[in-house]
Length: 302
Ligand code: NAP
Image 1 (cartoon, rainbow, N blue to C red):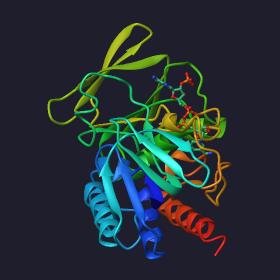
Image 2: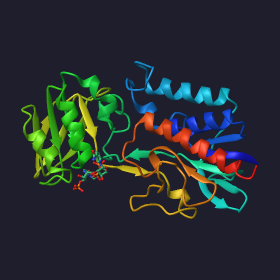
Image 3: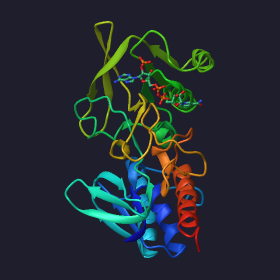
Image 4: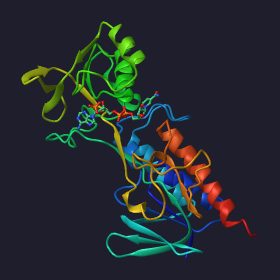
């Protein structure tokens, strides 16, 4: 029986493991793919305090090493469901293993919604990106495109217009879902072009993106861009927890800044939580808060 089982081995889950181990708890981290989470998709991270520049992969590895050096156990397992057994939770994995913990911290993150185009996954980090804040600086002086019509896409386009030579904002409808003020700010930029009623249909370039094909009202147009930022929303990875707690309308775990959920002994950290700012720093911060809350909950009767 573990004191705390952390589901998800990204910055939130691994930071939770570090804090919980330093509080003397027996900790298991369950991760379905590779440790490090979404940040490992970023070619360079230049907004993590005290580390001026590092690849996302290296940053993820460093946090994982630190958690393991502190004594966290790690298993590569996909969690299928979690059962509340009163004094403890049973975590059932997709391929038959199960683990028991007195408390669990959910830190499964969220994945950016993908367009579903051919070679999209292959070109991630080689021109295709999902986070302009993380990767926009690598396209300084170059033409880029943003796809989406919500606040994220509008903000991404504004940010990129500060440094990129040209920004094409592609949206599938004739009206944006995001705020009018952001639309007006973009209209005032002379290096931004709106391409409305349009969809990206093809990614061009072998190993690196060098263009995209856009279908606008049935007419194909090729745009020479070295970056495409896809900002069409996120999908939380919380399906396995539906029986354990209530998810909000978008599928996120509802919890405030204290990272406690409605279910006793269940805490949540990082991008899978309902929150406004989803960055590696805020994920790590959540990990610390959730771990300390879980430790206090475990120690409540001492
Ligand atoms: P969002 O508001 O859900 O917008 C997603 C956009 O992507 C929509 O315009 C949608 O088109 C489009 N879209 C969805 N699926 C698509 C597909 N398969 N192909 C092409 N386009 C597709 O997502 P978001 O912009 O990430 O924002 C998420 C939430 O965070 C929102 O509530 C937003 O207001 C909030 N947010 C707030 C701020 C802020 O500073 N206040 C900043 C960023 C985000 P349709 O419009 O046609 O549906």
